[in-house]
Length: 325
Image (tube, rainbow, N blue to C red; front, side, top):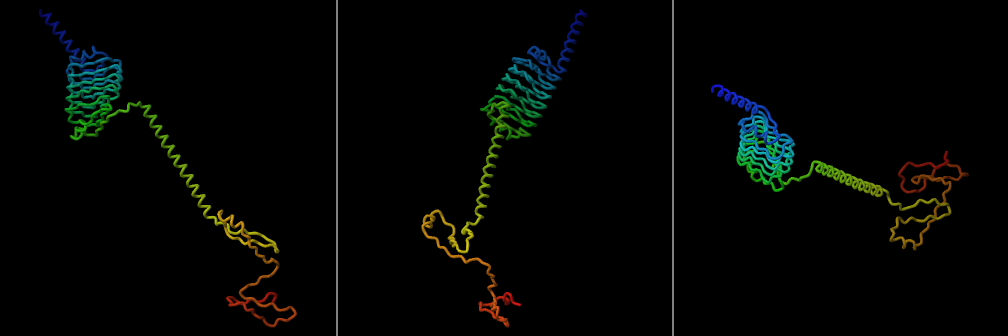
């Protein structure tokens, strides 16, 4: 009998040691059977990672505290994640790029010592964090859900960003902001565009090209306008030609210029005879100063004195006659 009791105690000890090892190191869950192995751990000292190959519904029962992190990334076939007994997570929660995920339920979760990042899940419609009170880091939630219920939330130390569907209701979250729950910024958006990053990049490039074309067109129009203004300014500085210089001979008559003629006056002016005035012949005559001149004496008469012609008032010094000694 004593031997049997000793064997039972040894088996119990081995199981306790095995359970202790299972709860103290990080683990990767690939199926529900792997998750069931954690049901004996109230407190999990390591991190729990859900493998990208995991599919269907994963339920983590009886685990109340995770001292590491809860991570699920790239598991495109995972549809639901449930942790009904989980109360606190020290290393943070990251659930991202889960294309088939529709439901996350952690109704007993009250505190996360790091941050909560749930993004890149286009089909996520249900988020259950009814008892969540405190988040030490950032709170980033994105999906196709219509509303987020955080009735117990008291403090978020990091930045809060919540993006839902086109019918997303932000009024309750806005009230939390008014009460000072979000300590480091808050954004709530409704109406996701649903565009891929490539489409958004194409739209951005198109907008930039359109703006450049508009700027180039405006520059071209302004340049043409300045050129026209300069050409008009040059034309306005040229005086209209009222007279034409004509070289005529001694016996020819030069027409008197009548100034510029408008197109309306041209038919009338063409019928009127032009007045011609005779031009004096240009010879080798010597022109003297018109202000003060002296009479040139006859060559046969000796010059004894000079006579001044009456030319009106004299404004300058007298001028001697030409060829005078």
